[in-house]
Image 1 (cartoon, rainbow, N blue to C red):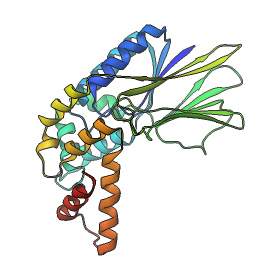
Image 2: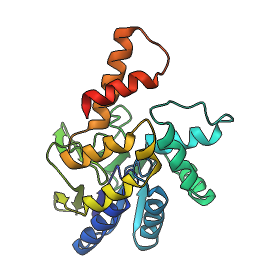
Image 3: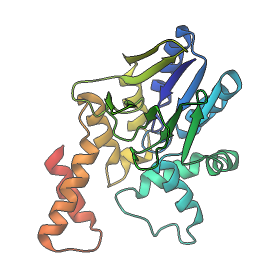
Image 4: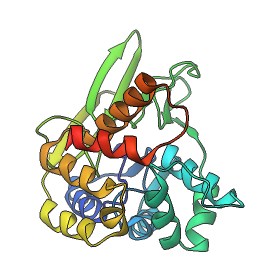
Length: 264
């Protein structure tokens, strides 16, 4: 069985489309989707459509990530203006482009899955690296970190395929995914990195609401695409650091702007 492993697409349809085209040449049997398909880049609906199409062609094991959880929480809010200022436009613009069918599909996603290989072993899939819920598991597959790596601890193989949409591996300017090949006699893990048209993605971001908004989340994403550095995460850390130093408990757009200046 050849498992294609995808994670952290974050609305980057162009990257996902290219990655699928490349992976389909590799005789895959099924796809493991590790969550965070939406938000950030402006084509979340198109990403979900592509995932749904893949479900008609392959056996798919699909779970939710924290970004899917953000959208479902936002969907339940009575006052939708009451949302973290840092993610405000990002969440709102994503939510507005999703259809009712998209939301229903997201609601049905499990937070983790166990894939049975044989009577003695299985694959455990989650978005974050939750190591405590593993029993009789041979493989632990997870995303969230946006970095491609693998290691073995005791009898378990841990696999992170990296990110399709926005890598956090310095200097990696493209999409990452992995293929796990398992038979009765051998195991092989292949890690892939492919290039796609980043300039086209950047142009789409510049035309989106998250680029025009005062939060300027779009500018952080563009910087990350251009460098392979997790600039949005750096901005969030800087923001929290300033708030702690100034002993400010409430969200502040002024402090956020200062944090942005320090990382851009």
